[in-house]
Image 1: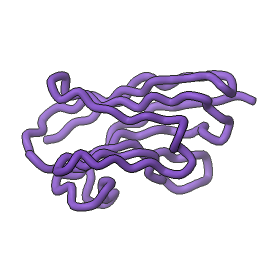
Image 2: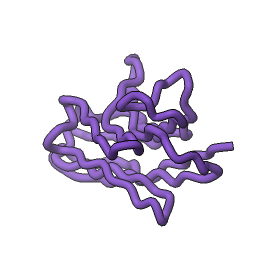
Image 3: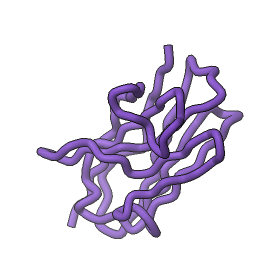
Length: 124
């Protein structure tokens, strides 16, 4: 089955940068949606940035736009999230998420495969 492994999280001061990586294995479908969700303490998981394979469309949450950049390397089966100008409110567990059909702009959580998550902590 599909397996996703995140890496690159850590602790940084406000204004710093991190690059998250998601390694994908066990996946051979043509159409999909893949992206990053995050969950802050005591809050629900929310989409941060996603890619839809059918047309290459990219989605950014308002909170991420202008600071985060999503990208993928098909040859390496890897997706990235470059995060710049980090803020304390970006503190969360970040998850790599893949949904096979890719009908919507982001994976549908209940029909998606989730990675284990990687912690991002931004200090003020």
